[in-house]
Amino acid sequence: MLNIKLNKLNNIKQDFTIKDLENISGIKAHTIRIWEKRYNLLSPKRSETNIRYYTSEDLTKLLNIVLLNNNEYKISKIAAMSDEEITLQSRELAFKTAINDEAINSFKVSMFQFDKVLFNNTYNTLLHKKTFRDIFKNVFIPFLEHIGLLWHTETLLPAHEHFISNLIAQKIQINTEKLQFNIISTNKTYVLFLPDNEIHELGLLYLNYELVLRGFHTIYLGQSLPLANLNYFLQGDREICFITSLTIKPYDDKIEKYFYNINELLTNNNHKFIAVGRKVQKVKHLDLSSNITMYDSISDLLKVL
View (cartoon, rainbow, N blue to C red):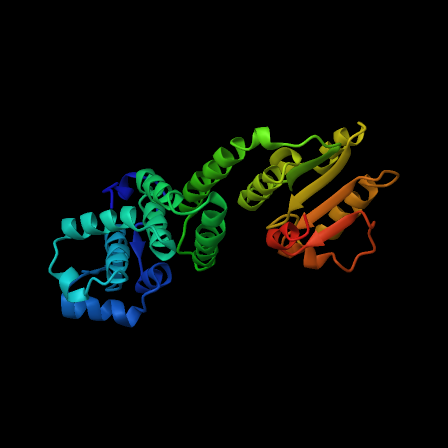
């Protein structure tokens, strides 16, 4: 879409295999090759060792083609368009429709092209039709799940993930700020944080939004907090419920000790601790305080709040 020159950015992936294109676009490699041979829609290059590869421009063009094709544009019609027409038509369509699948496709393009304008325009179009909660649950979550798959297949670089995660985080924070006057008077405070060296905070940010939406008082501490820092919150009279999200850290060989330390932290007080994330499966067998509860996902936790 926007012709940002990725080759000016250091350490950004510029060359893609056909498997990369399949993983990102959802179009089978066999179909991509047919589109190449029959319609000349893509023109892969070859390395010095004769291996086929695609550029970031090819990737963006393919995502635009998929967007048009999913909206009743025949491949033969798309093939008759110039590259500029494909870009303009797909951009116009993305801004106009922005239904779930098209929005996800547009967010993919914005991520690989580092296109903040496209991201914001797609988001704003969604906002005319959906609430922020709907957008997060029905668009952002499936999109982030797909990013996770791309990460595991090494199709994404940290630069891509950080760029798009920061944009989504901004939207969560903006919508949380709008709710600050919604907080009801209560003696209970939720303190949200991530373990030391854990940086994946989108889920915790959204949980903070949901708590504030419900009128709860929260203190959001964010990424990479040493556990000892929580002692400060035990000194007052307020009822505290700590919440953490476990994505990567603590590592498996350290997680039991981490929860034993939490157990000690809650000794001789009535404060609560909630842990969410797939890593809680590693410690559910431990004999811990009844004030410690665990949930496999944020969705599971939200059902009981």
